[in-house]
Image 1 (cartoon, helix red, strand yellow):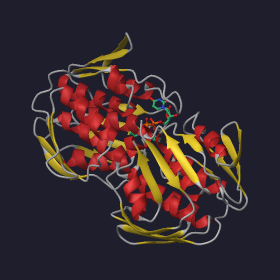
Image 2 (cartoon, helix red, strand yellow):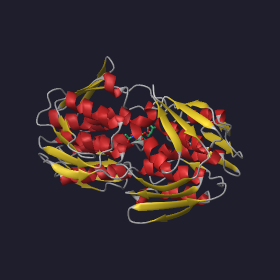
Image 3 (cartoon, helix red, strand yellow):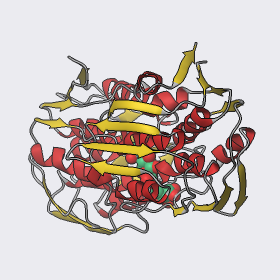
Image 4 (cartoon, protein in one colour):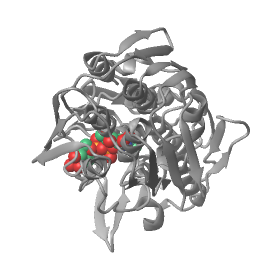
Amino acid sequence: MDKLRIAGGRPLEGEVRVSGAKNSALPIMCAALLTDQPLALGNVPRLMDVSTMARLLSQMGVAVERPADGAMVLRAAEVNDPTAPYELVKTMRASVLVLGPLLARCGRAKVSLPGGCAIGQRPVDQHVKGLQAMGATIAVEHGYMHAGAARLRGARIVMDLVTVTGTENLMMAAVLAEGATVIENAAREPEVVDLAKCLSAMGARIEGAGTDVIRVEGVRSLAGAAHRVMPDRIETGTYLVAAAAAGGKVRLAGAAPETLDATLEKLREAGARISTGDSSIEIEMSGRPGAASLRTAPYPGFATDMQAQLMALDSIASGTALITETIFENRFMHALELQRLGADISIEGNTAVVTGVGRLQGANVMATDLRASAGLVIAGLVAEGETVIDRIYHLDRGYEALETKFAALGARIERIR
Ligand code: UD1
């Protein structure tokens, strides 16, 4: 199993090019199931999760090609096996995103229940409830959801809570349904908007993506399209927080600054100087960061996917920060690993009390989930001496060329195979 070795203590200087968004690429790849025509995508990141999704779609009969770096062409001329097996769903929960499109296209689907996940329970009841409102029957047998519907009907769906993939699944089901669907309390995440743009390019009729009420007027069929995946706001945020922690001056190119308001606000609070262009962000930081308290929330609130990175920053800040996690119930596992590096963190319920220390010390740590690992990399970059991070397959799921990009900024970081 690969590890990362980091020798901390160097400021970061230079430019990084942001990759396409994982959380946008995954649902958009599933949208290919909705048409027998080719869907040509650009800015698709090279990530384990993207390969896993490609494998899942291939198993169903979708032809997936990667003609050039960042390009991907998917064609679901026929879908011969609308099944998402446990082996793939358990490694990547986003596999559940095939459920809506499969039902819409094939009238049936067999999708494994995702099961537990390291960061919380993450049920799919809202996906199921919405599809049932659209006329689907869904039975759970032997760990699989067996779904069926002659043709989905438009419906008014009020989500009990804000769910990103739930909103995306229902939106993809609704585009081919008979009549209008209204999704209330919908997720407003930029990735939902990116998916809506791609679906619209395919001929779907969607209004309100980016607000909490999405209205979809079903159409008979969709066509192929070309779409460029939006920049990854979490990757962008991760490099920004790393620069704020390690100090220095970093420019993020190919970014979407308008999707990062909450993160930029926290970084400014911590003392970073930030300027934004149309598609770039520059950050400059000198001296010790100030503590920045936060509370995670659905977009446009502070992203739970940036929480671990901010905790790493707060670990070395002057002052005490309160970090409250409201989205996932078990998303503080990185706190224990940060403590191994010398951080002063205590957990009280869903709040972490982080008292900044003058310096962290390198140690061996273990990555527990994707974003937790990113927090550990940031801590390793500022710790004195050597930090070795084990189980970095979590990082490979969601960060393209992480060690290459950090090394280009002057970090001493290498992969040990
Ligand atoms: C997506 C993102 C993930 C991010 C998360 C929250 C993708 C591929 N992943 O995950 O990176 O951390 O949003 O921003 O886009 N819930 C239910 N019932 C449901 C669905 C969700 O109770 O049917 C709960 C979950 O347990 C969680 C909360 O709702 O507590 C939000 O989860 P959700 O937005 O669905 O997360 P994902 O879409 O899985």
